[in-house]
Image (cartoon, rainbow, N blue to C red; front, top):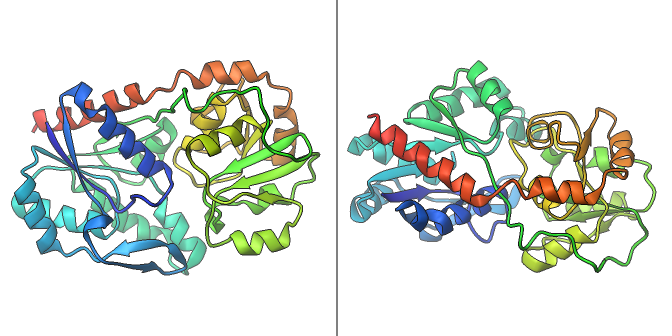
Length: 335
């Protein structure tokens, strides 16, 4: 298998899409696959309106078409619905190539949070984008059910994993703040619903790891919260291990790899009972999912850390890659 993955999300962005694709490439040789990426590194770009930290590639369909012909992939996977994804979809259809896609981000909800664009319009466009492929991969059963109800077709499951060697309980606590520590890791943006966490009356300290367009305003509004900025690798893992509860206030995430990182680090989860937390935490006993996020956060303090670690160890990138490459192979074989 010579697989071309086209993605608008790429380094230096730090998010679940980038991490998932990097791990798929690392696991590819074990599944007899060779992966080539088509990323924003090949194009000029401009800042995304309302979110300048993310840049939009000025992808030209003709250039993308020639790149595909030059690399000669046996399979094409389009990971995102941005300019590169759209140009790759156009090129595949022009060349008569089959392709698969994946649904990572609720763009309709994110757009409506920033601009007066009805979600129904956005979902119509996103549905056409994905239904043009042989299959669309989603991370959870509840997301699959939701997209089926919205008219998406040919849905296949692709779960996620976690690096349990990096993210693990540790003996040291590097955060010099009052305990207990309630941690959030992710983008600091309006769609993450962070204020529903930051406004809570909780003991100890709230810690935010991540960056984004809402950070400056939230730092001003919540001066008692520790904002550490974007962290990765060992620095991020040590912060997880220095915390007591992972609070996930998002109502729109499709999965949340940070949930797995927290669990592998021994942290119980406090979240709303929505897609993502419902699928990851479920009936594991490793988190508390309630409409009252404060109640959930306080109750999560009672959950044993070793239970969370044991459960986190069941999510592996190897199994994630097996599903990913099996999906791609299956839909091309069936063609």
